[in-house]
Image 1: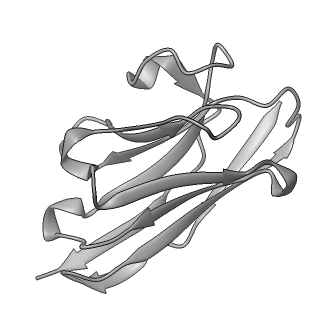
Image 2: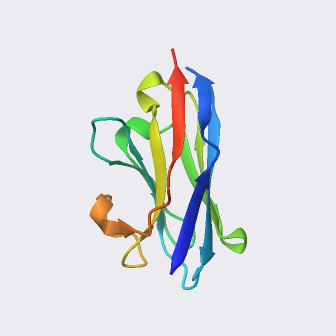
Image 3: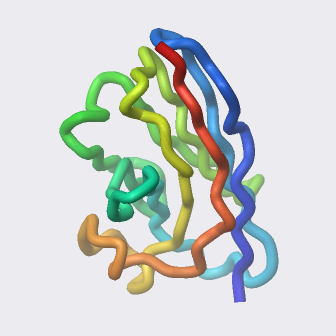
Length: 125
């Protein structure tokens, strides 16, 4: 069983940046594709970004393209989410998760598992 722990959230002004980290421990082999999701109060969990096992391919929700960058360091068992040009509507709890099939097969929350506890991101206007 793999455990995922997110960190790096906080309070930032609109236009600012944050880098989130997702550290994996436990059964980290074989390597899985990984994803970031977010959930704002009263809203469903939504896809943010995903990265393949090798890190060569990345996928983004349309509203995050050009602002967010997902990356990974397999030697450190860590996935990152660099968030730039943050907007108040980016305020949410951000979660990382592993692709259930090992490879990236879709952007639905149902395609992912082993969710972390989340890290709060708050963007003030």
